[in-house]
Length: 376
Image 1 (cartoon, rainbow, N blue to C red):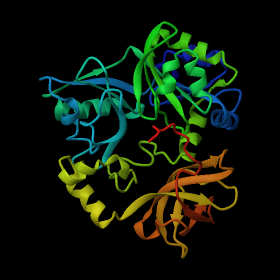
Image 2 (cartoon, rainbow, N blue to C red):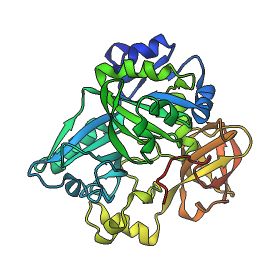
Image 3 (tube, helix red, strand yellow):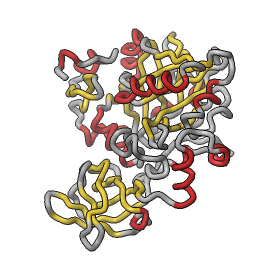
């Protein structure tokens, strides 16, 4: 796709003005880094607060056509307990195909109003496919309304609460995976305490024509820097979080992808979702291959596609995400290995530039996640 054909988010001009290095990503021109550099952007987010443009992702409302609960309907394609969500609560889930494979992962939130509405955020590269699946499978009962007039920005890091609560004190009361309507600089926004960096922070859905002004207001703080795709990737990798299309695809089950937490307890018992036979079978008997965290020895990072071998040299899998972890202080990776080699501490070999490097299966996240959870 040529640069002329790439879509632009409402923050494109701000990225260029700030010196962002623009690259094609999921059909959009997006900043991979700024003059601060990927390493420093990563560390700044871990230490203070990073501002991310994620407007390329898909936002949509889902409603039922007969006034019933749309969550009960979409549960046919998603194995999470969504119908129990109360207003302002959100949940990570996966969109399944008939074979129990993951078409995409997404966030589902119950809105306050209009009553009986769900708000979903899907991955940029998958949004049209996701919408088509929902329309094809459930379109006779659901109405899906893409929110094309809204931008999405994420403020992530330990200083995020202080920065955003200076504009709207009520955001400090949100716990991880909660959302509410908030007025920021005179603009009504949908704010959730969530993100994909492993840090505390917020995602803010804002009208497109107000996104630049709000972003500039947040950037007034010395604690806030613009962060590009490069650091976004290294942050989520250190947090042990999957990247759609890399750490799983439509052939990968939730059990293989090691996102079992997305499977609701009662949903497992009822088995009333597509692909349940395969998924429940793998839950009971184990999957042949599973995603694990891997720490290479030495300093050489193992990139996506690197072959994984057992200690005796047999090729058993591939790295799906890998790179240098700035906070971790060394290379980290994720990949699929046979279940027999998935225990933490298992020794592996990684074929990096034609040479075998030792590596160890390691629990994720590689650095502690610092979400602000509800006090019990």
